[in-house]
Length: 168
Image 1 (cartoon, rainbow, N blue to C red):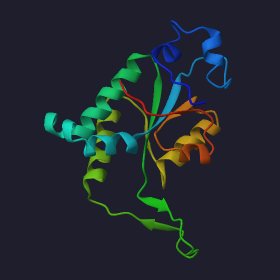
Image 2 (image 1 turned 180 degrees about the vertical axis):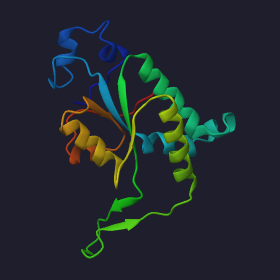
Image 3 (image 1 turned 135 degrees about the vertical axis):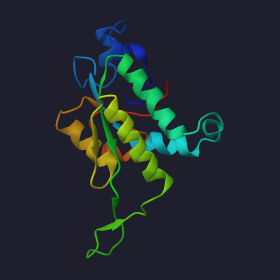
């Protein structure tokens, strides 16, 4: 709970059993499969001035470097891409969902990242609505050991283990 973790907690090479128990007593083994809320990474890439100065496609670059780092640690990944419909918080019960705009830089980046990840052999799933809701469902059902996302809604959707503020 709000404990910083590093490479040792994922690789299992330097962490003791007590170190892992301090991470929430979720499981006695190290996390091996993580769901990644990819929309967070894509938005980071698209909004970073420094990355856009250095890279032609900053979102693709960010997703590639972070994915390769996690794969290098021996983790299995399930990348979750946001759906084009969002859960509506308004009082209009007749229209529970509304469509987002299509054709934006975000959706192009989602498609580019999906294609790249599939070429790398990394599973990619597209949520019908909120990506963090699907990540949470995968974690809640035991399909993945944890979720990487900066969106705390993952906890509200039922995720048991959430890793935030991920950097290489």
